[in-house]
Image 1: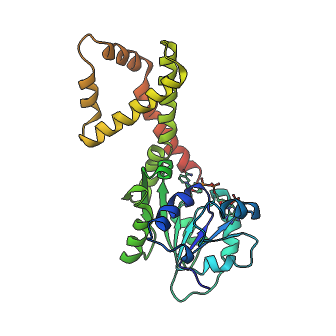
Image 2: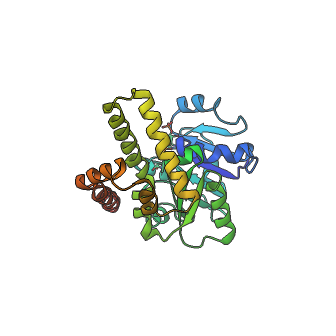
Image 3: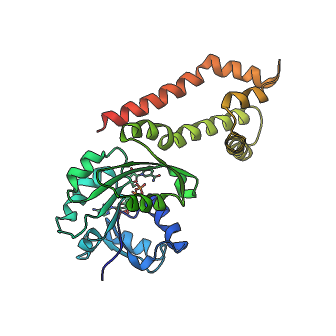
Length: 272
Ligand SMILES: NC(=O)c1ccc[n+]([C@@H]2O[C@H](COP(=O)([O-])OP(=O)(O)OC[C@H]3O[C@@H](n4cnc5c(N)ncnc54)[C@H](OP(=O)(O)O)[C@@H]3O)[C@@H](O)[C@H]2O)c1
């Protein structure tokens, strides 16, 4: 039996991408073969995934079938890349397969040298893809056809806004969008702590902090506001907000966030 799509690594990110495609009918589950690391993961995943998807472990003799598909989604951890590459083999194929990697920090150059004979694409999705609110940056390798580009966009568009970027910008993209949810989570937690300090119950403080962040993001987005405009709308003369903003400026919040994005960018570059 031959498959149309091979998924190498069916963890959280691959599931977030594949599930909506199968559930919407854009991809038939029976056209998909997924490889995971361990037999116990096969047993855990089978009842969770659409039943027509073939799920096998890395020790299964059918692994080469996943590498013979015209489209391959690589979604293992970056440290598993070399081990996985060994299983890819050098099966000669009539058409070079399309390999889409979501591995953080693994460059197109490394992908192309690790998987010769494949057309490679690097994708940087972020965690909000898990709830179809993501962002995804795409950098094309050599010789990707317009049809293949359309195919790749179709994989990420159900769960994210998709941007095509030069690979040189992906470190900054990742430092903002992939690490960003951690910065925002820290802010949400600290805001809730402040509200608890001011007397609100813990559960309520968390819910209110989260809703304040979500509502603010929606307002910025839907009214296409510059952040400074929104800040000025909220801060009335001599009021409570400007008193708080004064404290945040003195504490260096703005500078801390700028430096955080720079630090993540530089770390991403150093890890290559
Ligand atoms: N999760 C995110 O929000 C996110 C965001 C952006 C980018 N990414 C990128 O996405 C990739 C996957 O992340 P994840 O969070 O989905 O990781 P994960 O949940 O740990 O999934 C990794 C998958 O790889 C499988 N695997 C391990 N060894 C394998 C092998 N030899 N052959 C085939 N499959 C193997 C694992 O199976 P077992 O469980 O059986 O070991 C598991 O299904 C990473 O490279 C990460 O940089 C993730």
